[in-house]
Length: 505
Image 1 (tube, rainbow, N blue to C red):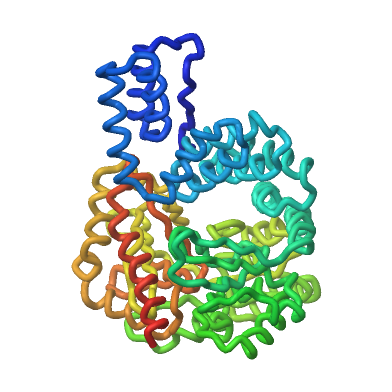
Image 2: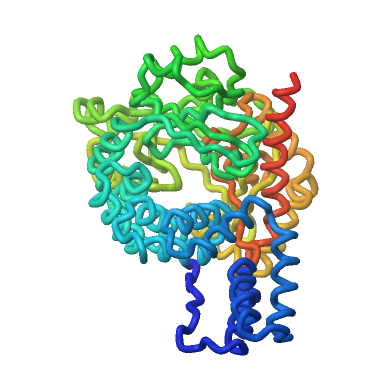
């Protein structure tokens, strides 16, 4: 369900000191200490010694002293320079980075109130709305941003994701190519940077999500979209300490592979998730990579080019690859279950393949993995420096388990089951399964990656996918899944420790 966004709007018809003091208290209760302090000061200027205003002022000062100094400075600047859209925009971005969507929305809107053609504010608001599932608002503000500034990267990224969801893949790709051809390298400085990381990315959806792995308050990020990188840029890059290859899907790395290889040959910096290791994790190569691991079941997968399907016919091409229904079929380069279909018969397979259009297909032998109680269960672990950390566990009545649609946040029994897994995966899965998962991480041999899996009734681990394009993010602290956050913190903490260890080495 999309997060409800709202703003507190001071009443311009309430200027008396007592009413200002009440307004200051409401602002303080809403977590807006800098604005509460300013409002209390206005009340005290008109009525020195007014006790409610004095109390709010003291509490606001205490709250500001306990808060992050960088954020406090932005909040105070935005209060002092209330009509300056740049001050509001800077604060909006800070709130968005912290996941404070309602506060960020308010500040973006304040920036637009005085700078209605401010492309960065429209783009930021569009990205914010996309993140909380308000797609119509995201599209509206992204298109406004592009009218104000052709090629705006943030607006292009947001709008491209919306177009991609609607199946307008070519339009999404063209939009991103237009933006990144204008600028391919983006510097995101951290106020108290511990390290500068060059992040290699692409315009496709097959990237490792870095926002929470490399938080903006401690890592300076150089985000480089490699389809549009040029070798002439290599020598002009800002100084950096590490390279993180965030291009996690080898099926989508093709247009950037040559440039990435030449960069890594010259850069002389440690590389996390080297492309040569990522290349082994395509869906068709995963069974080969994990072959022979004890207690690990990896269904065979084949990539069938569209041209071969057209020349040989679907049934013949699939049969010659050694497959027959029941099968899973999906387009190459897809994630999150997009385009994934289960075909129990040849006619169902033909219908599924026809619906996917002109793309190459992956076909995978289907293995029924229902638990004795009739539910399908899927877990995810994240490997950091080859070690497994539990991330989520979900059960569903449907064979394709989507965590967000599984009702994990609404069913106390399923929540308890997930928390048992997150708190003690060895006890929850058993030593046999956990040992098998540990072996998978060692075989993948990546700095950051993940595994989606189930545990079969005989105790073996059934692999759905094992690769680097795995999302990790904290949950809303006031939401039903907040109890997951300690597990998320262990993952991100392990990644930060891994970076530090590399630096020490």
